[in-house]
Image (tube, rainbow, N blue to C red; front, side, top):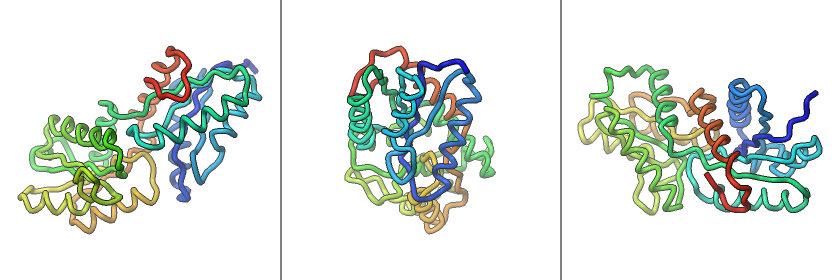
Length: 258
């Protein structure tokens, strides 16, 4: 076996819901298929194993000395700014000679919008439906101003592709910036007279909050509910873009770099 000196470590949040880890592993499997010579491993912040420390230790024992850690997150909120850097720094401090470069989070990116389009198409919407369909971009939610701003900007950018309206919403309740819950966003669009309302979950894997988005969509009376982003080929390509950008950057901890 040829030794691999550099590896990609994808760090997901984790969930008690087994669908979450299964989806993450399916996504990393797509990444491996796109880049056969790259070693790709997965770690979780909570609920699932391996932990970040366990995954880095395993890579280190196998001879890997260069790791690109990629947060499987759509925005730079608490996990990206605090939890992941702390876990990586702790592991790096006890593994001499290990170089860790931290990739940027996934969003924003045009590839994410393409993946959202894929899921809406799978839920029966066609290009001809754009002019008569309003979309709720439903994310998990955050109190981080940077993350809230990115979600709002993503909705604005997506609106420019032809949907008659795109509004952000959160699964976890109204935000300090006034972002509504999924059901309230659906009802507001319905009250404005839009012919069709679709909900597009802006989340990567199934779990408690995506289920709350689906429940909110149903409670609000949405006509169409798309699936989570999941193991979309666009996400796999985006992971490799983030990897390539980080692989050439200086190793820095604990800060996240593009």
